[in-house]
Amino acid sequence: MKDDLHFLRLWDTYSPLLTATQKEITDLYFNYDLSLGEIAEQKGVSRQSVSDCLQKCRKQLEKYEDKLHFLQALDDLSHEYSAYMTEVERFVEKEKQNFEPLSALKEKLDGVQKQFGAEKTEVADGAIIGKVFREEE
Image 1 (cartoon, rainbow, N blue to C red):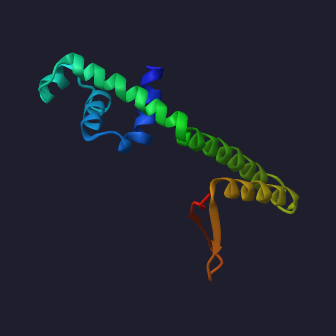
Image 2: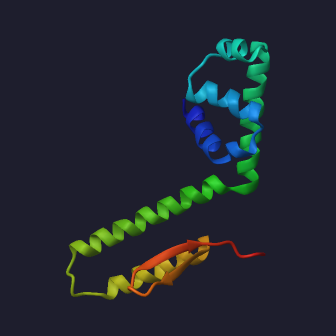
Image 3: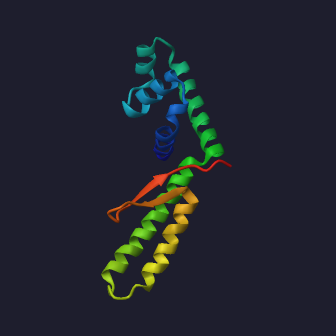
């Protein structure tokens, strides 16, 4: 079960890199919960070829993650964001006249922005929007 959840996270992230047939078979198996036999019958192939396709896709998606680390980066960003949001919530609960923790939080959030390539832009009405960009290396 744990492996299936890990595979689904990889599939959600990297499925656009699979072939159309690989995508369809993995989608039918994991998202539509069809058996190997049902998929084989629908696709007009053997159960063994469906099983081989699923194993190949697992390995391929793991290789993508090993090389790109995109899923790990998303996890890291999510954990960091959660930690900062917890700090913000604690700050709001504390005395509102003490602004020193806010300065420290702003520095940490600026660090996250730089690390993940986010750019802040202030618009005329004072609202701040974020833009994501990639710098060429």
